Length: 284
Ligand SMILES: Cc1cc2nc3c(=O)[nH]c(=O)nc-3n(C[C@H](O)[C@H](O)[C@H](O)COP(=O)(O)OP(=O)(O)OC[C@H]3O[C@@H](n4cnc5c(N)ncnc54)[C@H](O)[C@@H]3O)c2cc1C
Image 1 (tube, protein in one colour):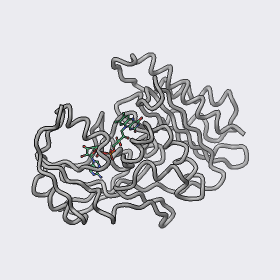
Image 2 (tube, protein in one colour; image 1 turned 60 degrees about the vertical axis):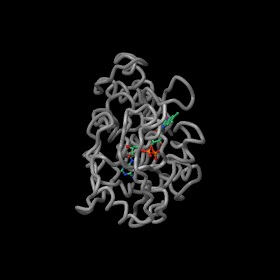
Image 3 (cartoon, rainbow, N blue to C red; image 1 turned 135 degrees about the horizontal axis):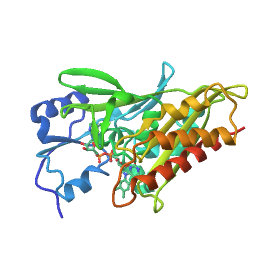
């Protein structure tokens, strides 16, 4: 099917885009990479009267380090992370995760911030944002605000973003040298949305884990850190048994979704396996 008719706006500045959204509010949608919005419009599951195309706004195309954080602008494509955008562990982590997102043509158009705006439960970037406590900056004619990932994701495809707000930037704190991470996901075919995924990020002091971040995506309506699993690891050395115990804690803590692809118990088993495997990548 073809999308329903809409008015197309192509602003070249953020101020113009914000003004169009302020005028049309709930009847307007931002067009970023179009990799989620265009299919949804083609199926007529969304019929926005106005599309605000942000692809001409050059000021939103950046991934730069400032003040100990990596700042990612709204026009930054997934493919920007095929190469390391910063030399430390965070740059390596993003390069590892990005290759799990869909297929190359989709990564060439889709954007990091578009993924956060769309908020699919199985989005690798949403899982990364939740695990690393990203800060998400939103701009509208009413002003600018920054929201922590834990407060931003609200439900399946539901976020704290109002209809007239643009996600202009996401930022991630740099990871200190010596931080280890593991990422694992399971999908039925390569490139499909995953049924469950885990990003584990551990900071060590010698052999002891001093900070643990275990983020799970795909299993519940939105990705989140699983504190119960993190608590198992902090203060102890990491070995295979500890990985197993933390994975069991994660599997017990989640409340998995059910859909045509997987029932809750299957997803719970996947969480067990994904968390264990992600943690085992951090073993000495
Ligand atoms: C076959 C296929 C497989 C895919 N597999 C995966 C996968 O495995 N993992 C994954 O994470 N994604 C996957 N995707 C989705 C892809 O990553 C999209 O690029 C991403 O979800 C949305 O980014 P976008 O820039 O394309 O946003 P768009 O499609 O342009 O927009 C998506 C939604 O977000 C809103 N939006 C976008 N940017 C902003 C902004 N800056 N401010 C406010 N609102 C905004 C739009 O209005 C729209 O509602 C897949 C897509 C396809 C077609």
